[in-house]
Length: 80
Length: 181
Image (cartoon, rainbow over all chains, first blue to last red; front, side):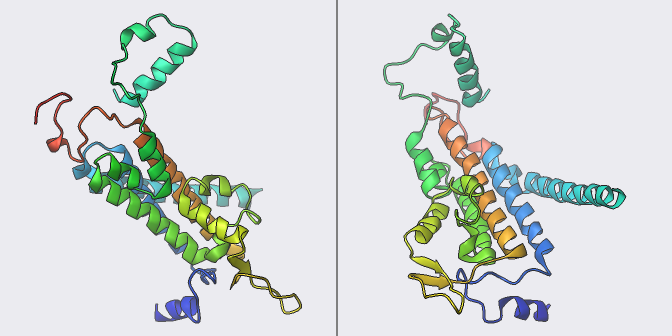
C-alpha cells in the first residue's frame, strides 16, 4: 500500500501533472459510484433522513451493474 | 404531483391549443412564474449554491460538496488537461454545465496555462503543465464530465422547485402550503 502511494505521488505537482494511476485506475470507480449515488439521491428524495440507506442501495446497484456489464462485454469480446 | 410534472403537462397541452389549460390555473397577479432563474444561474456558478438560495441548506452542502469533490478528483487525476476543448471537443459539452470547468478552459484559452513544450520546441507562455495520456486523461475527463452531468440535474431541480411551498430538507419540518408558522 505504501509502495502504491509513493509510486503515484512521487514528485507530483497537483493540477500541473497527471496522477500515475495506470495500474490502479479501476479503484477510482468506487468513489465515483459513491459520490454519484449520494448526490443523485440528495437531489431526488424528499426526506434527507432516508439519504444514507437509499444512497447505499444505489451505490451497490451501480457497482453491480458495472461488474455485470464488464462480464458481458468480456464474454462478447472473447467469443467473437 | 411535482410542480415540474404540472409544467410539462401544461406545456404539452398548450402546444396543442387545449382550451382547458388557461382555465385550470388562472395566473395570480403576483405570480412570478414557475421558474427560479436566479437560483439556477447560481447553481451553475457554484454547485450547491442554487439549493442554498432557495432555503435547502443541508441539501446544498451535500450536493455542492459531492459535485466539487468529484470535480477535484478529476482535475487531480487528469491534471489541467482534464478540461481542454482542443483535445476533447465533445466532452466539453457536459463539462461546461459547471463554471469551474469553464474557468479551467478559459485558463487554457487565455494562455494562463500552457502545455509543457518538447525539448526541441520554443517555450510557450503561461504556467507549464504536463499533458495527460491514457488512463489518467480518461479518468480526468470522465470525472469532470460526470460532475457537470450531476450539476445539470441540480440546476434542473432548482429551476422547477416550487417557490410557493415552504422548503424543508426533512419531511417532519415541512408544513402544508399556506399554513401559518
